[in-house]
Amino acid sequence: MSVEVLDSATVVNFVEDEEAFNVSIQDRFAHLDTDHDGLLSYAELLKELQSLRVFETHFGIDVKTDPKEMAHVYNLLFVQFDHDSNGTVDLEEFKAETKRMMIAMANGMGFLPVQMVLEEGSFLMKAVELESAKLAA
Ligand SMILES: [Ca+2]
Ligand SMILES: [Ca+2]
Image 1 (cartoon, rainbow, N blue to C red):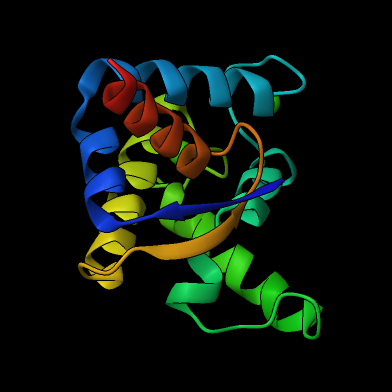
Image 2: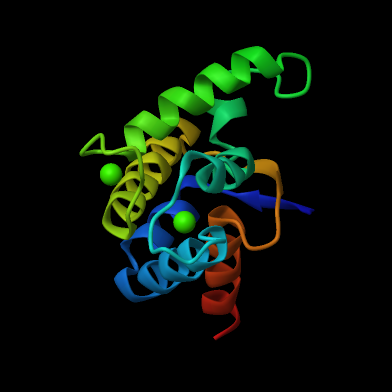
């Protein structure tokens, strides 16, 4: 984990960079799909949900003090990902919902950069990496 500064433009640029975003989605999906059946179960997706920093900003929930509340939120989120309600999340569902959530988060961030603790390999970290790669180019 590391502390990074990011703003809404960083997140939006990443999501709208179709190629970079697709690659990241496929990478992340493959990484989360530990039994390699091409679908994400609740347990598999949970790892991703836990790394999404969207909760603190979006729901204002303290992850550490209320695990029961978090379990409830994770359940609601899984249902959001599972568009066709078949109990698993496929690549298209994962991509569509991740994109939607990141844009929603970017909208919530406004124009001021915010500091966040990001996990290696998380989408936000990739967004930051893409942005700094562009700045360096
Ligand atoms: Ca799986
Ligand atoms: Ca599904």
